Length: 306
Ligand SMILES: O=C(O)CCC(=O)C(=O)O
Ligand SMILES: [Fe+2]
Image (cartoon, rainbow, N blue to C red):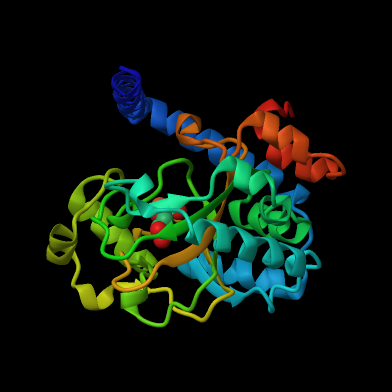
């Protein structure tokens, strides 16, 4: 019965969001929202936090291509050693969980309790260097939606984010993806994307930006040799605008893929009802002690009035 209620509630929410999205997409509403967004960006230009040379280079490349590769080492963030130590502990625990716990799902996620027991992981996404990069890329004050720790299962059925899609939450987004195992070829289940100019073309051909697209349909729109894989050894980091680029996680063929996703949008997202936090509010409050004003605002962005 509980299961039935849950499914019903989920379907109801899906239908409600579908309706909201269509109302918003009515030309006049969209036009007003787009103009307001441009105005906010313009007004915020003078308030953008300064970046170091490395940060500027990352933001420039992101603006150009929507994706950039770096590594935990190259990012030179003080809290990285603590973050990695905790991340490998989560990896260890998650790798021991029976995958039968999630039948028909392509991945397991670290639970909010597991993450909160290792707060250095969630909090790494809130360090000032990353927030400043996100804010400069988005052009607006940044909202942090938290961290999703994936264990992607080999040979799983390709559903949800294993299918081609563009994220929907905002005009732009930033995801920071950290690999915790070597992803050397396609069999390891890399994050894949379609280059920025081609993603636009695909959206036009499809006639939509939303929803999931099967491989066969994508192949017919854009040949698979143009699809790109994010490859690299463990601790490789990708920054990607998952709103601008079609992307998907390729299902790994042999071994599990361990990857951490840190999610950011602006504090005025285009579709706030699609934004959710990876941790419940009470857990965020318990982790928030000692955070700076900038970090608190990014974390509790829904409560900020500016
Ligand atoms: O599993 C993946 O690599 C893709 C995840 C994804 O689509 C996302 O985080 O937006
Ligand atoms: Fe996505």
